[in-house]
Length: 402
Image 1 (cartoon, one colour):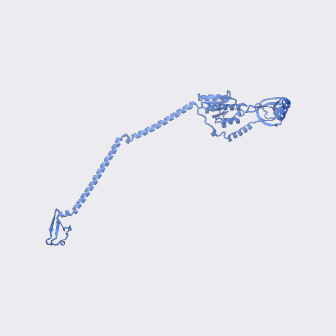
Image 2 (spheres, rainbow, N blue to C red):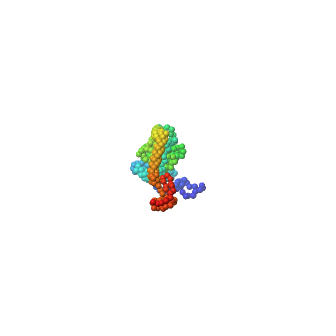
Image 3 (spheres, one colour):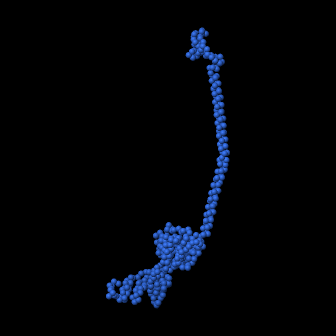
């Protein structure tokens, strides 16, 4: 392949093909996985096409009959197999093909093991975390639907959704939902609907089927496409017991396409009933509150202070009059007692007063300086004295002491 050629010195085509065959022959053998299609046999050779289950890629494989018949169970069209192949280039025809050296069927157990490994990877990356799930809109205006062509899943979703809310609109993308083209078509439809800003939610729906039929919905590329969507995605694949991997990353899992319609689109009858219940409940709350407030106002109005405010004033006036009368009586009584006490004191003073004594016929003899003479021996002849009676005073001179 590294031979230098020129327009003047070209290589014969046989030499070129031989060089290609030598280069391909050095590639060795490799295990390849795919799905068998176009199975046929002629003579001692079995011819088949090994198709990639995801991409639109296939390759021709020739298999010696003894290798084919040694495989248990014997492969048929549509079977998933792992083949040990050796690349061969046929120089005479200038064609390329693989030669099968060994064929091993891919059993359900191996498929489940692969799905479990992929499930663990998805969970480890956090693509299935609950905090990544987005809430569906309460009332979507436009719903994107990805389903099979003229499928029962499409009819179930459309009929149930429109029965629940007739005004809802759908944008339907009909794609292959099983086989070699399913992953690519579903992924492309998903990206198309996700790019449409009018679409509020996307439903991926398919009816039930075998594990192999539902394998496209566990493909890693489709799972990652669903997790990358900006629009909420509802997975409605198969029946309740079916669990493809897109159920893990979808924002909501529905057990069936009918269940998806019920979860995405609200029932107009149920919502009207709910509105009536809420309205009645609100009315009862308001009426109850008004009744309580009116009862409180009535109770306040029935209190004496508000029912007859003048009566309260009169009662207070009566209390004032009573207190005033009581004060008057107390003051009068105090004055009377004080007057009586004063009278007694006056009587005592009068009884003890010298003037009262003088009125009884006594007199007081005093010197001019006011000294009271108590004994006759205290005076001498010629002393000037003053004699005080009860009504007057006279001056005397002692003539001869007795």
